[in-house]
Image (tube, rainbow, N blue to C red; front, side, top):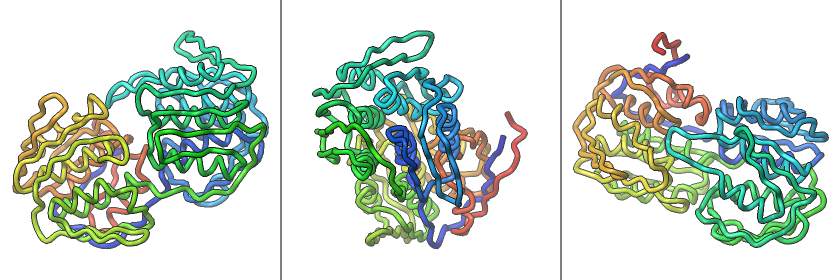
Length: 421
């Protein structure tokens, strides 16, 4: 197991290029099951979640080839297995997204229930209700979803609540269903639009992405395409906040500023200089930032995946802020670790009161999930002294070469083997 060691107090300066979006490529890899043709993806980040999805596709009999750096070739000419086993699904909830395309193409799929999650319960009942509305027979046996359908049928389905992976699963299933499917109360995250765009390029017919109502006309066959993965908006925002928390000057390149509008508005309100270009954003500081309240919300609101990093920034802000988490019920586990570093934070229910302090101090801290890990790295970059972030395998799920990119911005950061289990 590794740890990240940081000597803090150094302002970050320079440029960083953003990698392909984790949450986009995971769905696109699952969408490769919709065609027997070859799919080629460029801009694929080096992440553990990508490796897990590769293992899952290999389990199903899919052929994979990393023939160039950042490029992945996928060909699901034949499906030899229809089971997504617990051993893989337990490590990454997004694995459940093979359910829709596998069922639509093959008429059967056995997918392990993903179970709980460190940041809160994320059930897949909306996935299953939608597939049942399309004519699937769903049984739960031995911890597995066993789904069967001769051919899925178009339907009119309304989500009880907004779910990104639920929408993606049903979009993929409906793309090979017979007839027209209307999905209502859909999430509107950019990664959903990315998936729909690629399926349309594959010969699909999907309208309404970016709105709460999506209409899919099912096709008998889809074909392969070559696609460049969209940039990762969460990675982009994390580096912007890293520049802000260290009182530096960081330019993030190869991003889509429109996907960051809620965060950029908060950074501007906090007194930071925010310069927006066509595919880049620069954030610079002239001193201590101002405290500013935030409440997480589904896109286009302030992303829950930014909450922990933003709290690290507010921990050093001038004044008091209230950080309210509305998306997940257990996403303040980083608070106790920030307090170990000298932060003044009190949690009451889903709201954390953050009183900014003049300085954080380096400490040994334990990461609990992906974005909490990034929060602790940001706090360590700003803290005086040395911080050791343990259990950084979480980071490797969602950040491509994090320590290398931060080091290029001037951070004193390194990865070491960890003797603390």
